[in-house]
Length: 176
Image 1: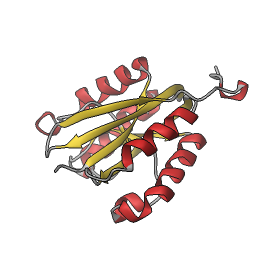
Image 2: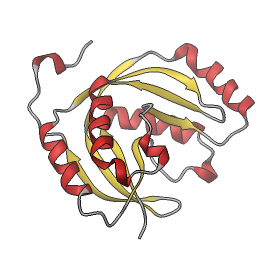
Image 3: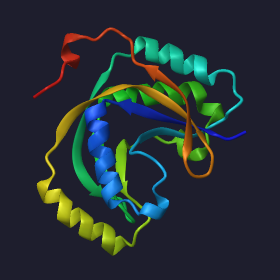
């Protein structure tokens, strides 16, 4: 059975923006996926507690406001750094609940980002960052849930989406 991947679901307008950047700058021969923010890279597919845990956490979680803060060099590519304390907290809760199931990579804390270019020469990544960073303006967008995927070596197969349905509080309203 294929391992599972858990990503943050984001609002359509931001998803379109990130997808356009990825389509434009990610090497086409390696670009099997839409832009995404990965929370866990390798969850066990047959574990009975994965989906109920996701369902319970999403039922209590209001949608969350994220900040696309800046473009950064990731060595062989470029990503957009994402800032969101509620996302860090949610990830920490899941990591604690699933600790014995996680790979060493997934046991680490999360560094939220959306990759728009990867697997290129470091000089090519530096050049793209130099080109794009001066025109990038930070912006807010919404995280609306979680998506569970099955990893099949190239394209991912979407298994299920889970909406954040917790009650929103006044301080979670979008900032201008």
